[in-house]
Length: 335
Image 1: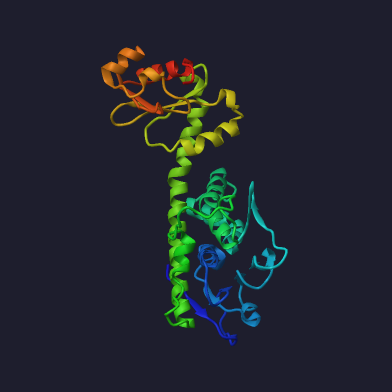
Image 2 (image 1 turned 180 degrees about the vertical axis):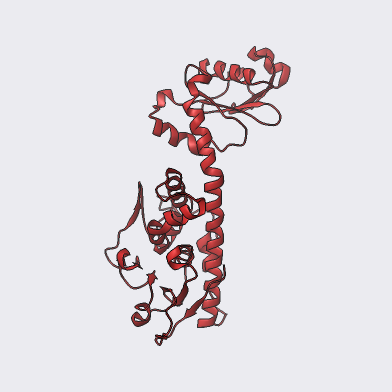
């Protein structure tokens, strides 16, 4: 989406009454670029003009101000996070201090997600996507902007990653040998708004279109686990490729499944055979690395296709065969 924006001097015309998003001028960062994009996805600020200034008189004319101004007053549409004493977090178990992107998302994210999904803001699915998007996309922007280390360690990183979203936004600022002018900064900032917006939209599509349905499939499999095996420690997915690992732990917590009853094996079918993955090694050491008839003979299960050498995954030609392998593995001692 093309963004209208200006780096504003103090004499903002009193004639205009177009909706204005205010943010600071000069060097820009990922959080305010993303925050501006998010605001422009809401009905209240759709197609708003972005004015970049640090002049209080200019900012006072804006309908909403982010990342500048020294106050956090959501009731007055003021969203800065640099002032002394600011400690706002997203909540819901997240404790990273918010940047301007996180502040905007906290107050307007539900609206944006609901609009994308065509659902009411209080829908459980909207809430799930809103929370997951914070976890998987927004929180990193907050952490980087506030200087929060990703890892609790004094040791320097073993390698440097310069391709994160904040790093790519930072690279859009004029370089040391480039002209550092209002025009060059504005051009870079508009590119940053477009870049952060495009990546947010891709994340929103993934979470709403793929992550959420996968969670529903895994939740249904967890609910039906006793139909697969009386132990309740084996689940069956309707197809392969479902990203179950990222959901299973959360769903077990939500269902109150304790560690001594946790799900150990996951059965699913792909285009070739019935596979299963595990939290416990498959079968016994004697199975590891075997295939086909040799594995079937050792395991005593017809139709075996393979057992990985490390014991983390195996396959069988039939669902019943895969289930039999999982049940034998469930009863086998840990090796």
